[in-house]
Length: 148
Image (cartoon, rainbow, N blue to C red; front, side, top):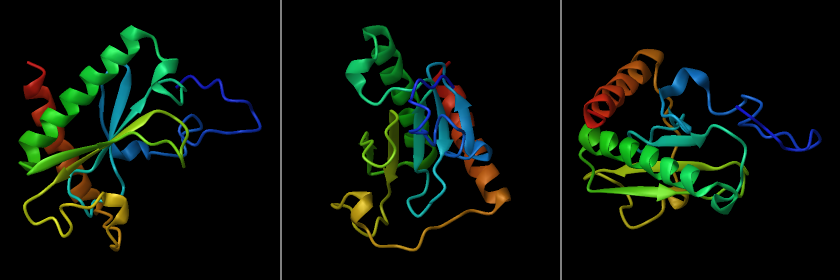
């Protein structure tokens, strides 16, 4: 991870504080896919840019294209693994100013299908190490198939 943030403004992604490395799904090239720690929405994944940037316009045209390809590959794997009714894509950065996409499968049994995930009150679901491993392995298998 390359971070060019001023030293007095640490980036929790660049410092390795978040996301947790034991949630890694795949190194995608320009980014890394991680299973989000809260699995209330099963399959919620975060795709994190490998270098520090806060806005899409800070990337070169090639980087933007490659990032969208990474995002599309992750989305396809999640669609195959979870068969969602819809996938949501979020690129915010208000709380964590580093380019990272949230990709959230919205399933048939979604408690609030018309609401953004941020507005759905819930107790976070943290998977056991075994369940997390199994969920990551499922997404990895579909990601590998979708890249062939």
